[in-house]
Length: 330
Image (cartoon, rainbow, N blue to C red; front, side):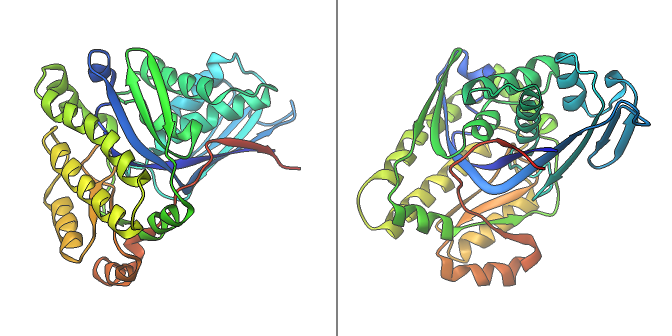
């Protein structure tokens, strides 16, 4: 059996500038990183005498004889692309539910593409893996998605990524051990109580971006990624740096709310309550409409967040340095 393990991500600054509708004509950039929550995909080659050639387990279970009959779009189209015909049992699991702003859909795409190549004896470079996942989602599946989620999942780590035309550059952040440790100890997620389809939420934003209505907001959001990297890397008191970084998150969230179809009264209530409780900063993760609100708050405040929002709705997390990986078991 082969298993891919692909991290989810937390996007801090610049989300929205990573869409082709923007960075084909203006530079885009995001600052964020992968977290210690994962999407797992198992693949077990089956004997030719298997009752059905393909068994696929996710929210539902499929048993079919032809790749073309698989309903899961990423699995079906990836296997079709590789002319796959050997019997296969595929099962998926995730630490956190999909549709919650953590890049799970792209993490799945990256993980499955990585897994299929390893089954064929091919080890892709990180850049190839990200590019193939972007091609799958944007060009084959026609999903309304950007490019940061696939890149985070493939490369891993805390970085600033810049996009211009067809070019992608990566700037890994250089944090001290103490500062990274405090950042990890300070982050927590609060669940809004609902998920959403990122592609659907982004339809309104894409319309506004293509019309030029979001240009000023996106330009400022792009500039803030460099400032955020500088704040996290510069010398000084760690708590002071995180407080300044939290201020940037707050301003970035206010800008993002102008892009269209991002927030709602429930999200606003959670965000404002967290700020009133003393969080340095916060923002909704992902495209908008639901999912998780990320807060950066002094670790001593975390118990009060659990008391206020319910321990079952609060998730601790930490940055992780690695992207998608594949291992053989047995």
